[in-house]
Length: 477
Image (cartoon, rainbow, N blue to C red):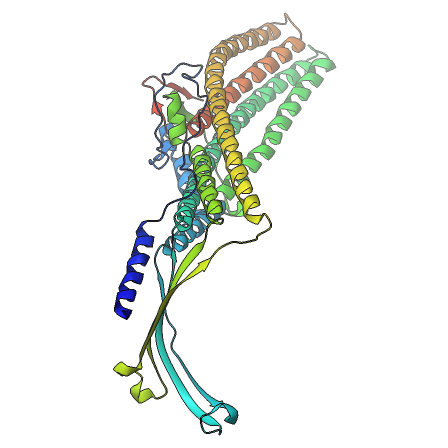
């Protein structure tokens, strides 16, 4: 009878193990109002998540070895990225901890002791002293009848994936920030070089005006104007050095190096602006890690609704112990010294003052919050792509017109200089024409730098993935 009872008991336990259900809603992706095309035009297809796909060294498309080196240093030494990787490792460890709850826990709890009993409690009425030795294996296992453990594992796995997506999102942001700051610095180098060329021209003009003044051919006013233009241009060139130093220091921090030990010599900007094709609108949902992180937040919150629902049902834990116990070490592992115990423990909520209901309500509200955040992140993502696309298109059109202005202003400045040397006009006309030419040329340099930065922003907005168009704009300044 005893053996029959044991077999029946074990059979019931096995049935409980395999017959458990999983409470809570299964995750379903929320509906989204996604555009069929970008404003610039592109067809739509159903999205499939691909945020894990390698983005490669996308910055190499610009063909700048200094930028390539900075990007490699940032990936290897940026401390913000290192902290994010540590958070990812923590989340993955938590997921492994929760997955361990799906299996029984077995502990060896060996013990020994020596004790004395009072005389009133002994068989002879006298005190007794004795030893006790025990070597049991203790078993503890929660029978996941309602899916609490399964939902917890589902949530922790999603949390780990959120941390991974956050890490990839931060990596992409840092890479884009390095490229953007680098192009801004090189644009300043071009402006500084342009101002330095202008300073040399202003000095030549001042030498000419000074000679004419000494010969009595012009008045003090022209000399003062020439001196003013030279000093003003020199001051502008010096002022740009402050902004350049700040960008250089920012690049040092991004690449994980002390600003005092980091320097980038001035260099020309001979790069190509890639014509980045936006691809399909759904590709944005596939590749952007921040969107993936927002969706996995929904998955985790949805699973925690199931965890909250299991609190309304009884929790069943199976405990057991098997081993040896004796009062003498010589007979500790003898067959007659064996001992075992097995049995379930049931915990059923009877009165919890609404705690479980409130916790379930909180879990549902947390899920609705993640749904709203996901939809908002999608809206932001499409806005960022549209901003970058329109920015590239408008800046490209502006650069064409600006180049015409550069050519015309250079011609006007040259004609004014000839007219002044011939004595036909005052030096004021020369000053105005040269100042206008300088401003227009600086604007052209700035527009090209903005095009480069907009292309970086578009690649970032697309999640680091793009297809380069066969026709691309190239400019050497």
